[in-house]
Length: 76
Image 1 (spheres, helix red, strand yellow):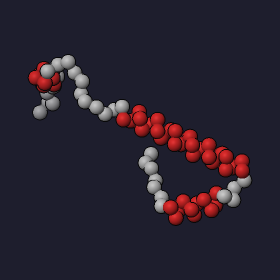
Image 2 (cartoon, helix red, strand yellow):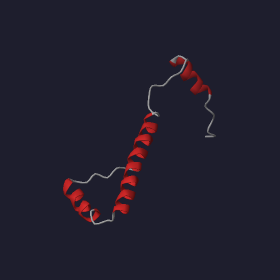
Image 3 (cartoon, one colour):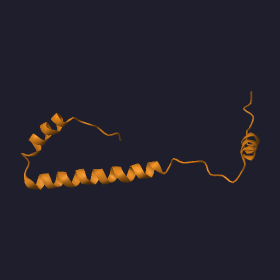
Image 4 (cartoon, rainbow, N blue to C red):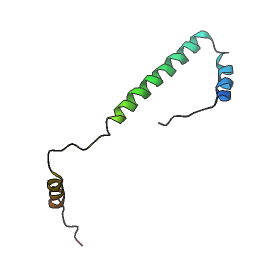
């Protein structure tokens, strides 16, 4: 899920509503927001693991040959 960025004025507007909540509700909201930050950080680091250089012991020529040898006719 993408991140939504809001400006300072919007934050102040929402905060005005949130200050009217009872303390129990505020604590629950804090916990949920904190957990969402932790979840986003772990999912981003997992996503980053998908990137990197190709690692293979074969030479470029061997890889090209393997790709060409694995081709099958399309029936044209």
